Image (cartoon, rainbow, N blue to C red; front, side, top):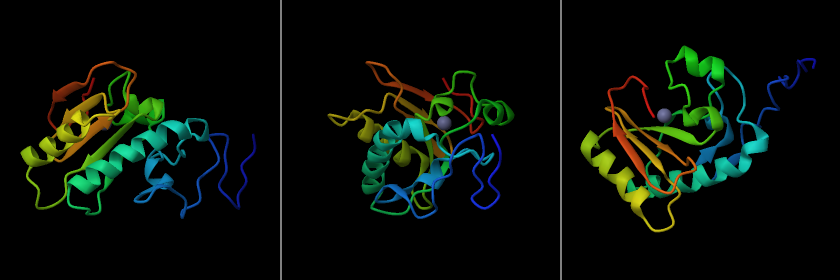
Length: 155
Ligand SMILES: [Zn+2]
């Protein structure tokens, strides 16, 4: 496939316009891989589920802006950042959300746990890191949780 210089479209996928949002406070561009690959359009349904969980967490954090550190990752980029081999980020099912200033790590973790334990939550993976929480919507009947350093060694 050829590159369209004007729009930046490549074989890797059609970019999402900067102004397009998944939900009220989450933009499609925030879900793209840091190597420039947009979040795959074919997986939009997964992004919508992630976004609804993101909004619940955002409300719990007092309706303050939350920063997404990592969402979709291509296999190449995932390897580069030391992501787990079967990382949920590869499938567009995970979000790493930075802990807001003024919330301590334990409180941030408890907020994420509370979200995941709400009836109807689709969060099935939750990782506790010093500066962020990882949440994902892996296909699983039970919630899996873990604790790690800020290196992204997740299950
Ligand atoms: Zn993660």
